[in-house]
Length: 205
Length: 214
Image 1: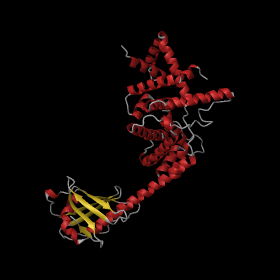
Image 2: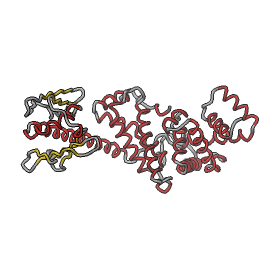
Image 3: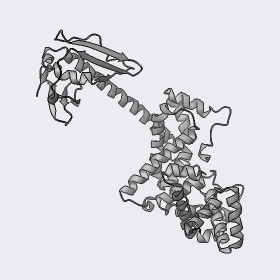
Image 4: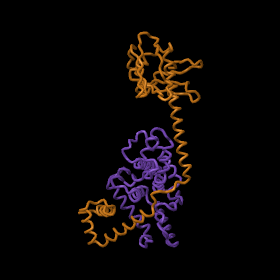
């Protein structure tokens, strides 16, 4: 699971496990460092899933609060980020479920124009010609828009697979559904994206 | 025979690298003989690459400093709320023990036995230590009170021996404490049976004395 990946690799930076132990002892400054370390990834996940900047911000914060409260029970038997990621996903999943029950359906009307920061993993590598860079940016926007138009279930399946690199079993566990359902959701999500991005990937940048 | 659903699943399992080596060889052989399926597979592969390239795994949090500081504020607030709850619980415990000293309770001792025997547990505030029981007093000398405290469990259990059996129709299965919002000491305690029917209500009167209301 790629969600398990990052931890401090800089020898000067404290390791996750040390920060977690200090946090478990009540050190809120250590927890603040963990928040700073993982807030961008957690926020990206909540944003991709609900496509609303304000709600994503609140849900990311809620995930960290829940993590703080659950820390005494965290046995360090998994990577901190993996554990945190599951909490964040559950928080977002519950939010989506409540939205669905309330009949709010899609969130297109509430969408904001949040885009990836320059220099993030998605930013073009090297020096592109201006027209090429613009096309890349345009392609990124079109993909974001297409993702936003998927149903919440299809969006979740795609985000968990394509961005976080989770296995089918991990996705099934997170989404509380069968492997067959995971495969169906991934297939139909991709078919819909194909349709929406037809022009784009037939003429790749 | 494979259903369309099976074929769809094969396609994405191949795309996502979820096939065994044998399954992969078989599926790729199928692709060789099915140009339409091969075109679909290639189209989906390109889409998958585009998604991986253009969906960021990290995004800058708007107002990042505020994001962090708000979390710290909320944690501090939670700690404060929990401390207040513990103080309220301790105050409630203190009230109960002071009431146990009152002569009026002799009449209601039988009722008290039911939930004492059931294991009435007062949680203690281990950090503030405000609910230590220094002594117990029972108006009826035939009644013997014992207090058991466990620091590990953060709990105190009061046992009352020597009380008369409670009539079956008066079986108390629980109690509920209602505190006044303005003063935690101003509490009304309701004893109820298994059907939720109220058996007794105890409250403080204007002079601060416990009074049996029902």
